[in-house]
Image (cartoon, rainbow, N blue to C red; front, top):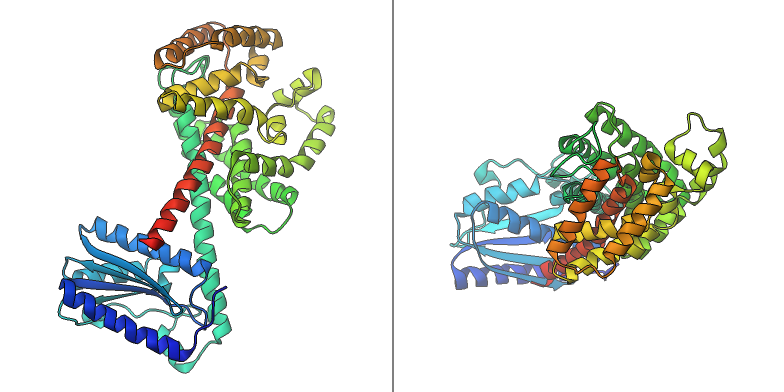
Length: 467
């Protein structure tokens, strides 16, 4: 937490703020926005407050940009009394005040924002001048100034509620971010073309019961469940094994939503399992302020399913009806997607991700790098979809052929596309669909996005505070 500040220091900070406002008005002659946070108590600067302030800066900038209002000058100061942001804009002060009031009433977090607007003549634009509604108390529905004047709530209650508002806002924001990356990963996997034997932008592969739009229908309904699983990870204080039990409900909900959207066709059951666990693991890592490296995410996924794996496979022979995955476990000892998760997605970590990054480094576009990653995984992974359709001997044959063709393959767009097209024709002819490898391509994209996007977000967050 930060340092405590005295009432005298708060009053001094207000005087300095007024002087700074007057100086900027005199120097620039433009409408001025002054942004501070409403934080009760003697501690005004702490990490969560800094994060809230950075979000406020982003929101103000975005809303002004959307309104076509240019920011002439911007500066941020940090003192014991809190963070302060100043935005000089070339616009009518009443229009700007309307935008700032809309921001203040847009969410629970923005209720903590103080966005004062001062005209070029030095006049502070009031809410009353625009018939703006009064701001409500954080703890009840009464006007905030009435509760403050009466001392209606204990300071501790207000501080606690302030922290809750900040925490909940960022948890929801992070859960939406994770869920969005999960959906994005599915859309990328679907769009990579030509994928051998799989539904893509060019054809239906070896599938007669589904097409590109079937997958779009399915993907479009999965975001809410991924959000709930990520949010569980962000909020749960239980063990990782207990977290796994918490998210199973949302996994089943996602499967039901998928089947309703596709009229009963199983497009994504396996990947709902994988991405759902990754979403929860990523949420837990963010809760613990850890980085989202593929290795870290994989370790958490491995820990989450440890008990589930033991139970599921111990009871395999007693389950009826037998799923394809259970049949292959009993016949060949193959653990399928459960085994991939239990290993921390080692096939992705050892083959999918390195191939994707190698493709990017060689100058391949996203489509070709994605194809190269997929081909590398088909060449080594025990794909239960291939085995279920064509038998384990066929898979071994395919892996031998593909391994030979990949060895020494020039990493150029033409060669990757040519090999993928050649295999697509072969797989369609022989009714082969590497659906397990396709799921792992989605996982590859997800792990790649989590690491890269987190790095970019941290850079942007740092810049928004220091600008």
